[in-house]
Length: 194
Image (cartoon, rainbow, N blue to C red; front, side):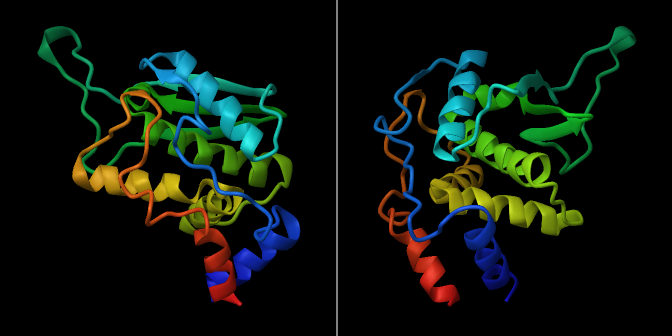
């Protein structure tokens, strides 16, 4: 019921689910040679922004690292078990920032999915002033990324994390599950929710 209600809300307030095309992680949609540099993230931010029909020039793109750091006297910082993030969205007094963990630069599919997710936060929170509490906020953010035609990205990111395979080194290529996440999936989800 939650998915149905929120798909209806997104269709009325954010994006036409019937008319929205699906964007695949292929050369056709992401014509770029990924090198693991910050320019990869700049390209992805602009490209995903274009597909979501938003202007990204006012969004700061910043980077951070959650890798362990060796300090004096042999001390090493470690993140908490199970903790960590691929990216973050921050807004403060009209300033909007997307922060990307530098490890994402080595994983093009995950980088695209992370930026799609963080841009969805920008659309909901920065443009529409909508924020739900806790995990429901993350669900709505993911649902918006899916509604914007990027349905395959979140699924591929999840599958790659399970399989330990980030794929797509070099140029954008075909996802391992392209047939499963065919461009008709979003309209099918919409029809099923009715």
